[in-house]
Length: 205
Image (cartoon, rainbow, N blue to C red; front, top):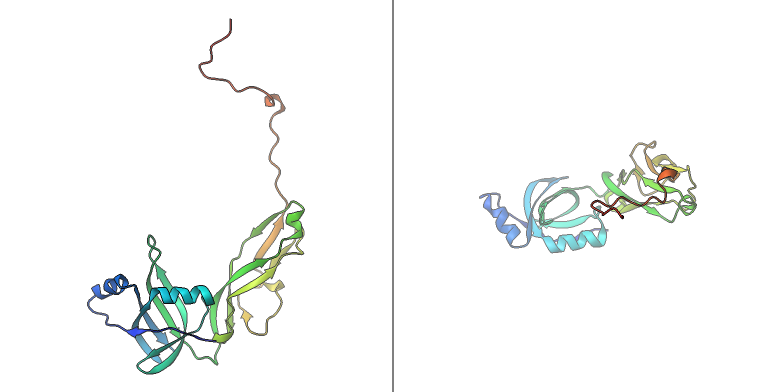
């Protein structure tokens, strides 16, 4: 299901117009892709950020340009390193009946039996590439780790098939493993119980 995002076409000259838009709380953006020429637009940053929080990065944004309704996906978002405000966004126009590729977050669910037994959880893969029609793109992929014992692992190829999307990431890519906890080396017995030397301590008579 698409969510509505109000956008406005914008000028690209002079260059200072981008700073003016950001000062007004708007994000300079561009939309291109399926049946549309590259078009510079802008929209309210707060509204866009709220929609992302509520619906996820793979949300279909329904926008209107020149009286034409366009379904789009977020292709790229640039963020200021210091202020964390959006500085530029690229939206991709899509055909809702054709599959698109997107990056999706991997979320671990449950508490591994191996962790309860003293093992250490090591997640090595945090996102996966999936293919689906835009309305079926998942917000995240949940991986249940409850049954993992020490020495066990889960790779992309171990995940159950999903009717809504196809995972394109290499099946051999490991997502998570439960490793044995490494023991710290024992301290030299000769130093056990020894009092630390105090610099400047007067020697007793």
